[in-house]
Image (cartoon, rainbow, N blue to C red; front, side, top):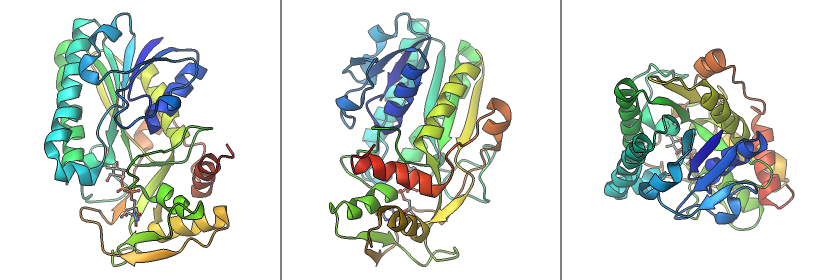
Length: 316
Ligand code: UFG
C-alpha cells in the first residue's frame, strides 16, 4: 500500500514506519520535526518536512494515513491547553478534511490511555467511561469522537489504538524526547551517567509498595498492532482498541528491573506525587487479541527494559 505516516520521525511513528517499510509498503513520513528527529526516519521511506495542516498535496494516491503527529506531554497540556487543542484536534480535523478532498478513506489513529482518566476498575476495557483528567487526554478523546462521527457519514474507515505505557526500542529506533518525562528512559539515564538519580513521584498510593502501577508495552508489539489495524479497516467503521501487556508494574519494580539489566545501582530519591497521576493504569487488550489476533511477543518487563538499554547504550 501507499501510506502517509504523520509524526513518523517520532518514537512510535518511526518504529511503525520501519515495520511498514519492512513489510513492503511504500511509506512517506510527514513530520515538522518540532519534536521528531530526521535520522529516525527509516531508510526506504520518503521524508517530507511539513506540519499536518500542510499535508494535502502529500495525500494524492495514498491508500491510508497512520496519524501519530501530536503534542503528547500531559504536564505541558495543562500549562498550554490551546497548543494541544489546536495541534491535536485542529490539526487532525484539517488532516481529515484534506483526506476527504483527496479521496483517502482510511486512517489508523494514535490514541491513549489518557482518554480514560481515573479508572473505575482494572484492567480497563474499551467500553469503560472516558473522563480525561488533562487536556492531552481530552484532545485525543475529541479526535476519537470525531472519527466515530465521520466514519458514519463519510464512509471513512478508522481504527484508534489507545496506548498504555510504551517503552523499549526496535533496533536503533528508541525514545529520544527533548524533554524526557517518562519513567524508563529517565531511570536508564542514571545508568548512563546523564542523571545522578531518579525521582520516585509518591510512595503513598494505594498499591502494594505505595508507588504507581502502569502497564508497559514493548514498542515493537505496539507497532505490530498498527499493521494489523491497517489491514482490518472497514469503510464506515471506527474501531477502538486498548494496547497494553495486561500486567501492571510499580515504579519501584521498574527501577529494580533497570538495576538488574544495567548492573548499575541507580539511586532513587522519593519525591512528591506528580499531579494527575492515577494510582493504577492497566489495559485489557482482550478486544484486539480476539478481533485482530494481536498478541504481545515481548511482554516481559525485563525484555522491554533490556531493549531500551541496548539502544540507549549504543549496543543495538
Ligand atoms: N515517574 C516517576 N519518576 C519519573 C517519571 C515517572 O516516579 O522520573 C512515575 C510517574 O509518576 C508514573 C509512572 O512513573 O507513576 C509512569 O510515568 P510516565 O511518565 O512514564 O508515564 P505515564 O503513566 O504518566 O504516562 C503514560 C503515557 C502518556 C499517557 C499516560 C496515560 O506516557 O502519554 O500514560 O495516563 F497520557
